[in-house]
Length: 220
Image (cartoon, rainbow, N blue to C red; front, side):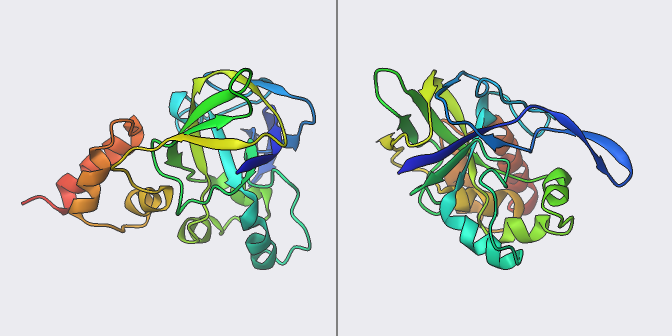
């Protein structure tokens, strides 16, 4: 498991449907080591804090393994690293394997950072505009290739090429892919929702969504 690229980008205006829209989804590779603090990478921006950013969405990782799939789907010969707006382009951390609450060491114990896996990424219309496919959001979700957010437990320096080590895994958790299904794809049952709600580190946003779904769909 490793980081292949660290990517940052400051907010800028783009024209979407004739309107100027502020977005920070345009990320570019940085070659130097960079400080990861509790809320973001230094030099990185987040715009709409109702859906991005905050403690439980400090950084976003996307698996490099998915790039080939999307190159085929988008009929693109090559996709630039950072296409999905990710801060970390990673390998060996797939959504079906990563679990909510997983604690990961990035880089060395002396100078690196420690993060915790929190939620799937739910894209907004800005992503569709960026890749020239405004209609792709539903397809993106149903592909299961969402990537995932992390919160920062220990601040530190990170850089491209850093190894990622699994430090701790909760004994009763669910995968990022399962969480995505519960959150957005109408998958799962009452038992799975209850299992998710028992996760101590569950992000407040997911807890709210899962509680509401359990009450509305599976009430006795």
